[in-house]
Amino acid sequence: MQAVAESAERAVLLLARHHSLVAAGAFGAREDGRHLAELTRGLRLDLEAEAPLHSSLERGRPQACAFDGGDLPPSLTRLVGRPRSGDAVVVPVAGAESLVAVIYADNGALGQGIEDLAALALAAARFGPPLETELLIGEAARTLG
Image (cartoon, helix red, strand yellow):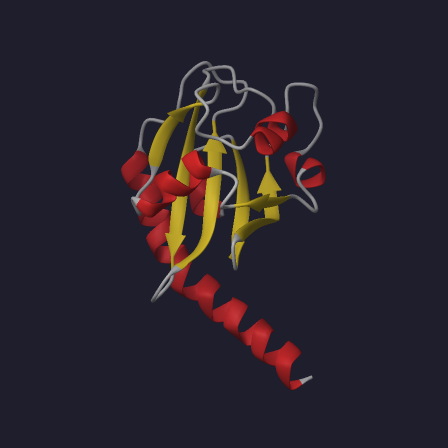
């Protein structure tokens, strides 16, 4: 997420779990000063119910979207609050064979949207395989007890 922090003021990491996304971490704060890490704890998004988000993830690359344009789940937008620019980015994080996570990012109180989608794509590409490995190790440890 450090590489994402170089391009965005706020972000939420959502791990792919079967047909849902589960918040696994966040940085930045809402306009009222509340930290996104606290606000998004326990957040679970049903991918099938969030068709616009799901379709943007299927493209497999970062997608800029209007915060109020209907591409983002209302449960997420309520928690993070509208960024000043009104723009956000959804970044799919691919593992070796499938989507392992999604990063929501915006520039919070800054008046400009995220301009360098290529940097976010590169960060996600570097982040995907190690994250997938960690998730598989955790799953194996739980299975083997």
